Amino acid sequence: MGKRYRWGIIGAGHIAHKFADALRRVENAKLQAIASTNAQRAKEFAKKYSIPDIHEGYGKLFSSEAVDIVYIATPHNFHCNNALDALKAQKHVLCEKPMAVNRSQVEQMISAAQDNTVFLMEAMWTRFLPMMTEVRDIIEDGTIGDPQLLYADFGVKFDYDPKHRTYNPDLAGGALLDLGVYCIALASMIFGKPNTILSTVKIAETGVDERSTVILEYENAKVAVLFQALDLEGPREALIVGTEGSIKLHSGWTAGSDYSLKLNNGTEKKISAETCKNGFIYQIMAVQDSLDAGKTQCELMSLDETLAITETMDALRSQWGLTYPFE
Ligand SMILES: NC(=O)c1ccc[n+]([C@@H]2O[C@H](COP(=O)([O-])OP(=O)(O)OC[C@H]3O[C@@H](n4cnc5c(N)ncnc54)[C@H](OP(=O)(O)O)[C@@H]3O)[C@@H](O)[C@H]2O)c1
Image (cartoon, rainbow, N blue to C red; front, side, top):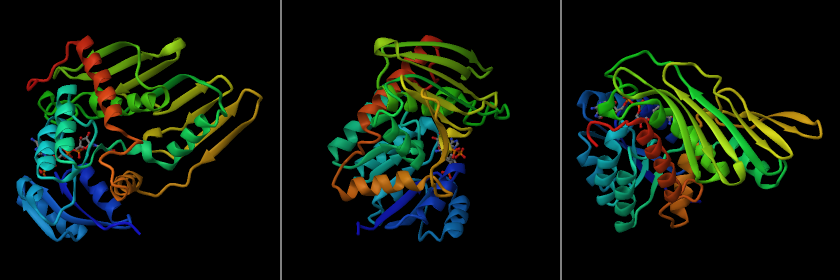
């Protein structure tokens, strides 16, 4: 049986609630502390999840002796500084996606984790879902042959609100960093780092990317075609095509359990991977398993891979002339 880990959450917003619920479902995980910029919000959050330690502001949580791992659930622009504060206080860090806004920020975070010999991982939770484990196994055992093509979309129609983090450039908004990062991470899992990056983009009134289509090309003309949008409900499907067959990830693939396997010999089957109601538990277990094994990163979502994904997003924003006000 592994060690019991005490988690602290910073930012008591939307996704922090799902994470807090997930922690209750994981063996050896204890939700020890919540920190919020707003004392009342912290208090209410703590009451809902029976959290012993309540902090106004994030600093006291970082310096708390009672916390082992910090989960960063703030908007994208804060990830780097929040993580640096936590890592320098020798806390392990699980940071919401995207790990940070650009390569330079991610590099600083990795250096701080290395300097302090603590764990760091981007919370790419989709990667840890049982469906994704099964998909990786199918690809690795050669069932669909050599993967050649990926189509994936993540389109979610948000109400247009220039202040909300999705559309707000000050909070590093835009479809790419918010949703596209999942598509690029899927492409990265299958093909690695692209050789060529092509794209189209639609820029919103606030200056952030509202939707984009991205073509990533790999060796021997293997290709990923990705679509992400803040202003369109996409089918949210993914299709991985290999030389011997294909795997279709059904609607809602980023949080999904259902997929189909179709082989060139005509056989086809629909599969449902058994998945907990709260899919965040798998990334939490991966963090704890890595720590139990004395690791400072998780092989399944390595820091090098996060860096490569960030580089692809930097290249895309450069094609679009999109820099954030604080960059
Ligand atoms: N894994 C997923 O499925 C998923 C889904 C949605 C979002 N996310 C990621 O989770 C992170 C947070 O997203 P969210 O949807 O939870 O956002 P949210 O509801 O806006 O919450 C973000 C929290 O960050 C804190 N914060 C600190 N300074 C802020 C500022 N100036 N403006 C706004 N918030 C500020 C606030 O918490 P306090 O005031 O309480 O400190 C706020 O509640 C992002 O990285 C996002 O990409 C992940």
